[in-house]
Image 1 (cartoon, one colour):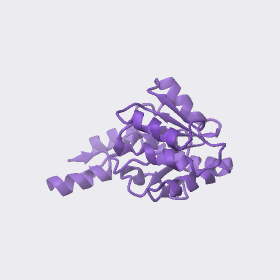
Image 2: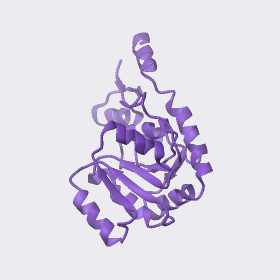
Image 3: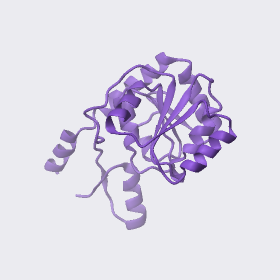
Image 4: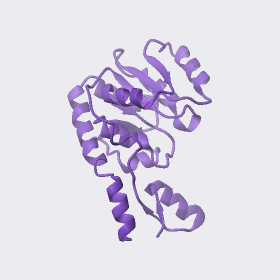
Length: 209
């Protein structure tokens, strides 16, 4: 039997290699430790600071949200200097914080206290961040071309699926910024989806194949 970590990667395997594979989702490394918390005044971004992750899109989106909402960017990469320059150009320095690489405990706390998670990479394979956010009971704002995230995020049910444009993503974040109850409702729906992805399920699938 042939498995991939997501339907998106199965599609690639079929397209480029002519092989048919079945998606077999597995939980992220920190699944057992991540939990919910208050819906704070910041949106969390987690990922490498590389072009394909489109952190610049999230930064530009913040300009379309209420001034009380902040963006915390976790991760390091080759684009950090360019992203910091973009923040200065947009005069958003007081609303965006680059946290850099953080340890597991700090990441868990950041997930727990976020209002939502913004995750809009281009054509992502699978995307642990989506499941991590849902396990923390946080809604996910993503883009229509973000690949693997779309296998979990359902627009209006557990997050928002937007056009990959700053204003569209910003409007979705703005909706959550002014309505913590909506964020909580979407986040709970996300949790119900993510909790079904377990290692026990993976093992049962492999043993029963």
